[in-house]
Image 1 (tube, rainbow, N blue to C red):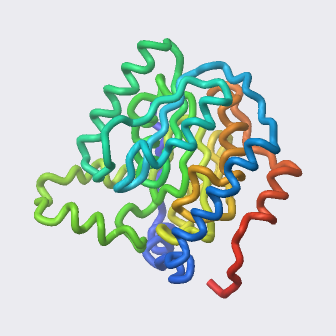
Image 2 (image 1 turned 180 degrees about the horizontal axis):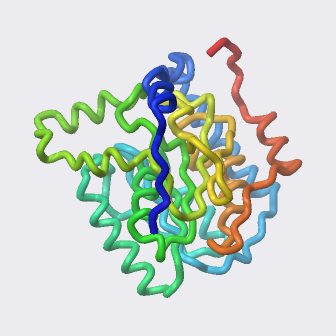
Length: 274
């Protein structure tokens, strides 16, 4: 099932002009993430979110150089909502292309076990994998949620590019699947929620959004750091809402009083021009 539309010259030009995240956001990533982690447990205790999920499988994929340990809070949260949660199980994410094939095998195994379509939540690079999996097996994927995933510019202006370059040093161009790289910016043919933060200190937020929202594609802005996406209360609220829907009754996220309150009270104490 094809659902691709070409990016125009104007869009490509705009992407090429995107700058790296502000130095202040980058330098404060770790400290802001720690503060956000401190809000995780109070959020869970104060807000009694429903735990009557339908037990459908949810696969959660980590970001570049991260492992399942980075998603432990998110996986526990999704589990308490009433879903069957899976980590990616491949150790640290070194951005190797063969992960895609391994993940296809994994979703086939999960689908075979549950006989139900899978929701995939992907953090940063994990979100890029999630979108590609949905393009390859849309019949098995219920929906995709990406968290700060720069799918519009994998190797563009981001503060993690130096790590990617280091790890791929010496790799010949002949070994790079250019078709895969070229396909990454295009949307998946399943309901997709792209969550981004303008305060992201690792990747430019403009690269983490769909070019166009459609009936099944939505961009949602939150406040917070890149490292804190997995325990950011506003993100958790969105995820809890999204997982309630099937692919055939999916509707866009609607803001709520609680969401608006979280957007105002997230602990970001810097003010400057971008």
